[in-house]
Amino acid sequence: MRFRQAYANSAVCTASRVALITGRYQYRLTVGLEEPLTGRETRIVGLPPEHSTLPSILKKVGYQSTLIGKWHLGRLPDFGPLQSGYDHFYGFRGGALDYYTHKFGPPASDTEDLWDDDAKVRQPGYLTDLLGNRAVDVVNAYAKSGQPFLVSLHFNAPHWPWEAPGDEAEAQRLKSLFHFDGGTQRTYQRMIQQMDLQIGRVLQALDANSVFRKHDYHIYQRQWRRALRRHLAVHRPEDRAAGGRIADPSTNPLAGPYSARKRL
Image 1: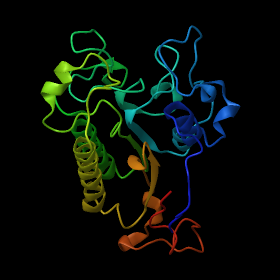
Image 2: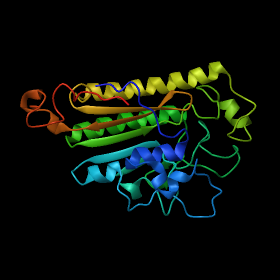
Image 3: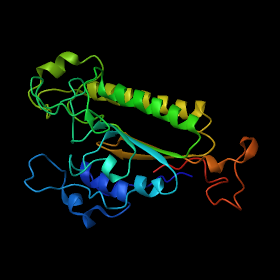
Image 4: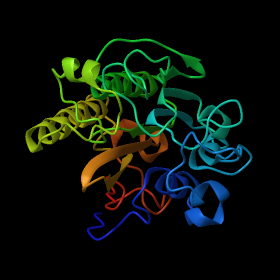
C-alpha cells in the first residue's frame, strides 16, 4: 500500500518529531510550539516522559526499540529517548551536528553531542555512515532475537553544515554550523547520495534477515527540500505463520496483501 499524497504537518524539526512520535497534532503539546527547539530557552521544554509515545505503547506489547540519529525533543536530565519509551539511543539530542567533529559549535569548542544511550561518546567518522552502521547492527541483532522490534532511523542529512564524504577540511574551517559561506548543489547531492546508500544498506539488512518482504512496515517522511530523512521499521514476527508463510488475514488484520510495506 502506498500513500502518494501525504505531507508532514510541520516544516521544522521539533514540531514534526512531536507529531511523529506521539501521533498527535504537535501544537497540543508545549514542546510542539517550539519551531524549532533551541538551546536558548530559559524554560525547561521537551517531550514529557509521561506522555504516551509510539515506542512506549509498543513496549507494553513486547517490542524492543532503538532510536538512531536525531532526537531534538529536549535535553537531559529531564527529556530524552530513553525517558520516552525507547530501550536504546545512538545519535544526537540537538537540532544539528557537524558531520565530522560531531559538535554543534566550532571545532575547538566543547560541544560534542554524540550519545550512546545516555553516555556521551567520541567516535571518528562521517555522521551519516555512523548512523547507517549502527542501524544495520541493530537490525541484525533484533532480527536474530526473534522478538518484535521498532527501529527509528533519523538521519541528519542533508541538514547544514554542507559537508559530504571527504570534506573533513571544511569541518575544521567552520565557525558556525549555519555555514552561510559554503555549500554547492554538488555537495548537497553527495550528502543525499550517501544517505541513500545507508538507507539501502538498512533495507538489505532487513531483507537478509527475512524481514524486509515478509512482515515489516516502513514509514518514510520527506523533509528539508523534499530529501528523504527518516526511516522507521516495525517488525512483527507473528505476521508469519509456521513454515515462513504470511499469517491468515482472517485471524490477523495486519497480514495479507496490505501488510508488506506502507510508505508515507
